[in-house]
Image (cartoon, rainbow, N blue to C red; front, side):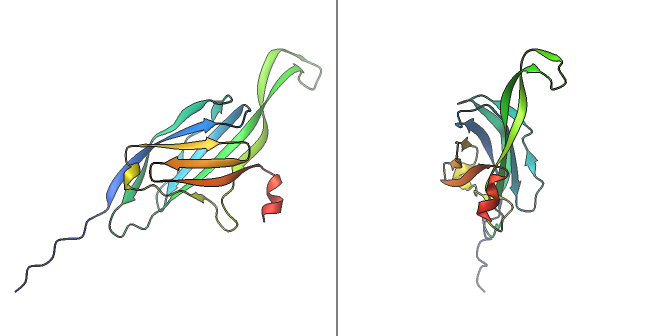
Length: 162
């Protein structure tokens, strides 16, 4: 009788840190959503960014690698370009000083029939930093295992993409 072969490797639970860099040249509030297939969505919440500012969006997002794992990492980046406002509130009441208010909404493109941008994290990304760089016209997802790029656009300007 022959010995059975070794068990196939099992899936391994892994994590990566996610940092966002604002390279748009403008002041934004931004939010990142991450979803590993079949799991709950990670929501960074909204964070304010000055030009060239970077912040940690997630200390850890989790994913699996290994034998027969079929999940992928899905992403959305939302933004609101901030407007510096001073003067009156529209009813003639003066505002003391300057305030930032939410302006034009932006988002990352995800593809014609998709709802999320795919950028799959791999074993070499475990414990490492994934950087999301938001430029004036594109969003880059940069991990040790690779890079993905998708357009960045004002909501309403996407009609030509469909």
